Image (cartoon, rainbow, N blue to C red; front, side, top):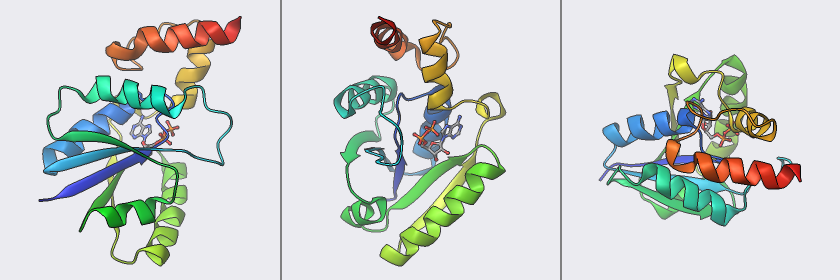
Length: 163
Ligand code: ADP
């Protein structure tokens, strides 16, 4: 069985993420969306549990997609599944530089681990979780940016941050 891992912080999940997950699920038998605690990023907007809940809602319609979390290294987590491949989305050249470096580090820890990249859909090349957080803070309409199932929750959280 072919297994892909789609890692990220998903703070929150966007339509750009969902596009990569959907396309990966068409290629692999099983996809694990791995929500990671990223120590280098600033204070997250959503807790891990909230992010899991939102990703679950967004991927509910895909039968071969599962959600998991990890606080450790991706290359260590991947050892859990024999032959699993990391799948990531590439938006711009800046993504490539970062991903290329990450891939070299992952290879040092787990030489068997392969990473594949899907180019971002042109509709979403500008879209990131940080763009969504910024928009939500200013009360912008999130339609077309995050999955419709989670819009209310993101808006509610942004409102509580404003008060
Ligand atoms: P972000 O950069 O939005 O904070 P993550 O750290 O959660 O997102 O990213 C996880 C993965 O999703 C990365 O491989 C990233 O390149 C990919 N990704 C994020 N946003 C998009 C997008 N709009 N289109 C395609 N891939 C994306």
